[in-house]
Image (cartoon, rainbow, N blue to C red; front, side):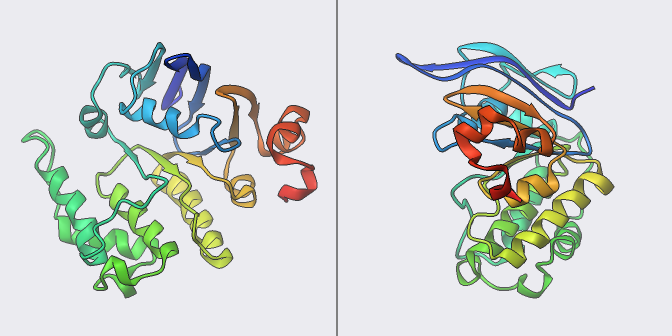
Length: 247
């Protein structure tokens, strides 16, 4: 059973249809790609999934529950976390404190939610994602590529089951991206996370994603394995160019 399913999602802004009959699934313990040209509707779909954008039509199911009308905070408490295209960090706080913030917020959610030792969990996650050495540095002092990993670490502090990542490799070096890809596969394989990845680095997408959905002008034009998508004529024409160019 899919961890996440969007069914016939449509979003209209006045006379502009941003998403049109978009149906995708994200399975648990896998990395799923969502790709397409700029303006295709990828971030809009993420906003729909997280509750930041209302649907004109369609539905969204998460953890076998219809969440179409749930507000964002309730979806978060169900185990849905995301990062954003634009870095959303407290640059004057340390790396550790940025991550701790999420843990402290999680501990205030509900008396029924087991509390975590936020500092111990933050240190565990910082070690997991490779940020221990910069944990006491202010975020404004570290490179953009590392700051992207801080956002991931903060998202992991709420102990999600579904993670939406919006261009997380932006600003990373090739070496950082390779490590990041291995980390995503580890989180899916060992921790059972369902991950949906919006990314323009096609080498990363093709290496880590088991299934890829392709958006163009607000519609899904292809879904399938990396090999199937890489060689799909509609995808090549709309976005990828030659299959050889994406590794």
